[in-house]
Length: 399
Image 1 (cartoon, helix red, strand yellow):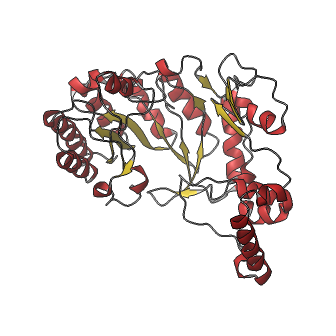
Image 2 (cartoon, one colour; image 1 turned 90 degrees about the horizontal axis):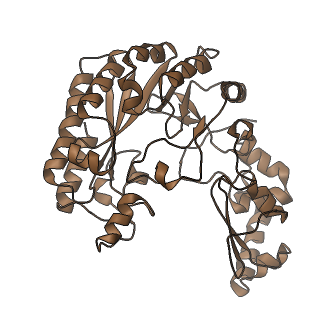
């Protein structure tokens, strides 16, 4: 039997409710489809098609048909706010020992914070069963097969636009997995997927300080054939420029920095620490050490002006120029500002009488391959026109 890999869509759920129902009725089918990636071609079978046709007909006649067929008595909606690994199985089995914070009819809302018995204080002990992940291995922009891991949770910074800001998550501590648990997970990945050439670390902030740089070197030492990519804050390296060579030695291939804006006025407004000089010095040192750099930029912050746009573009252009003289290369990832619910900027917009617009798809900035899923439009909160905003997004993305 020959396995296959579909094209990966990171916004598509790996396990759907339908998959879970099918798993209850036929575990072997789901194992073949979702774990081994072996096509079953069930759509071509006459009985399968007739069965589906019958189900569709009965469901149109009676909306509760499928629920009754499965023996479901009550419509229940359980919502979990917070980290759900430990509480979700308990809620699903009806043995949760904590009371919901809200009960409205059949809807129950649970909150998991530091005071909850289901709060995963030690994230090193949380096991990820990769048998349930479909199309886990992606192909990165280098053409390498890549797996993803998370080594920590939480962020120490307080960016005004970010839902992960420290001030919004005061009931959640920053937790870091042990080196041993991370090495064990990478070993399991390599064993399960011998084709893997790279690991992407999805932490909010993987490289926090000099200690984390040394930790990265130790984690990847046992894997001489793997490269890796991860997020770093400019201040994590500004005082540790001499440590960047250790990242090269650990086979770090690319680092991501949330630059956001080249305007100090805007950077101050969004609580973004680090100066323009810090950004340039750190970026140059990263690329001079042979590590590629991806800079994240945001246009359209509240009350942002054309002058602010220009500062951001000029900074991105400067970094691109530097990369032309270094072994490491620079690329951009550009977004339109989104007012995430509950963030500092979201609340400021409302307090000043502003209106948060409905999410729409911005077709004018969807011309870049692999970018369509990021091009949402929640409104233009800058002081400039939509056309000018889009022009700066497009020309910065083209760098």
